[in-house]
Amino acid sequence: MKKRQFLSTATASIAGAMGMLAVSPDLRAAAKGTSQTAAPTVLTITGAIERSNRGPTDPVIDQMMHKQNVKFSSAFAFDLAALAKLPAVTINPTMEYDSKQHQLRGPRLADVLDMLGASKAPETQIVFHSVDGYMPQLSFSQLRKYGYILATHIDGKPMAIGGFGPIFAIYDADRIAEQAQKPLDQRFTLCPWGLYCIEVVGGK
Image 1: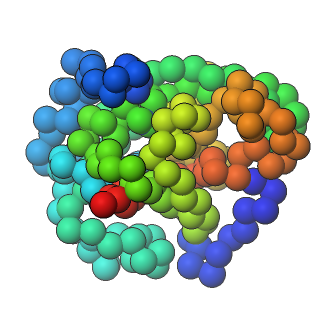
Image 2: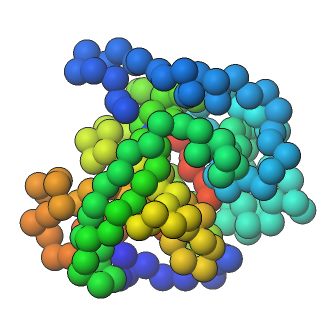
């Protein structure tokens, strides 16, 4: 993420090999929400998903989304407590910032998207939105292949805004052959920290 720049607008386990989804009780419970949580939202997922718990973007209230041109008619909003209830995994990638391994923990992004009924069309794209305007994009198949997590903790501590928080979408690059062979500062260009919104752009 050495190339990551602050822009002018700054401010999901996969099912088995046959593609059959096994959703945990915690994931099913989270998906039943029909109204937006009263606690502060830290992650909004929108686009080609079947479940939602909030209405459209508000050009006044949703200022960061408004400035970054994120628009939707409905979405699913998570607060930290909701994310904390989901089954979490831990990875230990070597980070580019100090060349040391760090422990990152959070739910699998593919599981979260499956829970929300995200499009599984071959051409489905995932667009990340970070607080600084960084907006990497990848295919749903890449996301599953790399095993992204929505990290909420690093080395046992919650991620803060001003650091990597509120959410860091990241994979264990040390254990992904095509990433591990790259120079350290080029392994995480598709891993945005300061993540606050994910758009699922459905394929046809």
